[in-house]
Image: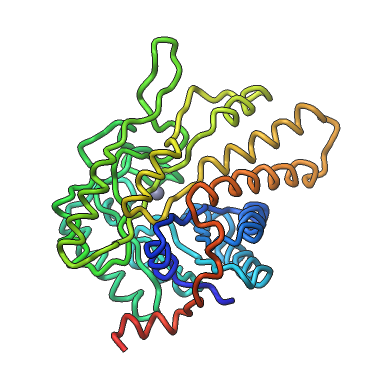
Length: 350
Ligand SMILES: [Zn+2]
């Protein structure tokens, strides 16, 4: 099975009202863990790489690992997505590498830090859509800006900043003007492990307060403007399992009280039009906790396989839970996968 465009995965998910996890990867073990979980559960999946991941892996290594995942798992539809592209140039590079989907995040300017104007976002996003669709490649855009910073990307807004949430009245205009295939919305989620500013009297972290009602409003406005079942994307959607934080700290870590997005909030979003859910932090936590345990319990070990294998297993178990909770499990064989050539024809109106 070739790599499929994200647009197809999200359109299929919309038909049956489930979400598709988009899992960030940096190395072989993470890709193997995700694919093992998706193979066992027959889950279509999005594997994504940030600019930081591409830099870390020196571009071609990650591409080849993703290709290996496709060869090894012919029955699973896999999309290869660029997370938080910052410019047309970066997106062009990903398309050249063979990515089937790119995100252009022009909610920030090309430095990845400064909140951009609406006009800049529209213009930059449209330039990427015009380019990518010629190759059948899907485009995700972002409207509003998220809190937190990940891989050097982010305006550094506080996790509880509400001044940059997605404006439901702008969403339809934005989609109409740019032609983007999916839209990342800012509803109070943020990147990284520290997503909340809310603590109880004892200092325990409480889940962040999300503006979930915006999802429904955005979806309603898009439908009214002629974009029914339009796929929305939730970034910063790790749940930050408390048992993983506890395990990291038990084995010598020093993580502060952290809290993520409860699965019930994500499922509320899925029921109302969220089709792509980005998860990175939880994978990092699972792997780090497993590695720390090996180091503390068996300090005499020095073969990287002795700690990378348990780390891979820990991420596999995490993803197994996610694909079931998001609802993508069992849907790998529901549809005939489209190639970029097929999608090119769809965009060209043929
Ligand atoms: Zn993001």
